[in-house]
Image (cartoon, rainbow, N blue to C red):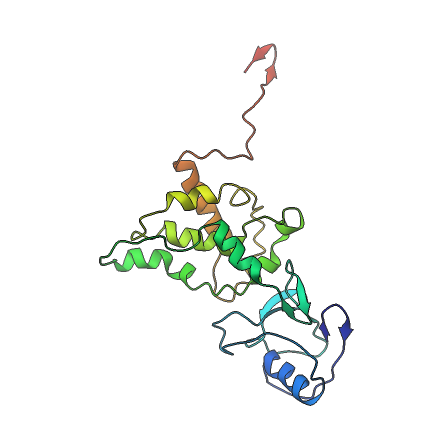
Length: 227
């Protein structure tokens, strides 16, 4: 079953195929109006992310079962069927300066390269963005995918400009994350954005940025003593 704005059931007798192949069969043999996104068919481009039974998946990797419910990813405007507006990905990356702004030439040790290897594998599929509950209360949240990319660059010894990135993620960024971990199991690349956000918080504290979730104002009345 594919669900965009309305529900539609399809009975397809295909075995051991990916969800993308099954939807292609539906589109070419049963319903030419069915609309979905795909690109590389190899789990690299990230364009075919959807929700299956309430969990984010890549259509080119997922093997469907009877009764599966397929929906577009959340927190994005649905254009049609399973296609959503992904401009928010570029917008939040821009808010976070989540790219290289100048790097030094030179050799990088194996240990230094390993620090950013996992985060470099982000394919911007939007799965963590879809799973994140913060957008229900703060639609301007920079998001786990952009924050994990920020950690990739501020942790790169070749990067010459990281101060601006750290400043950019203080508002609607690392402190707005609830650290619920919903982004971790849905990442097809095995990235743990929650852990990267924790590390960005630690680095922020080392740079002198205050934690806005801590209440340092006011005082305490303990037996007549004012603090």
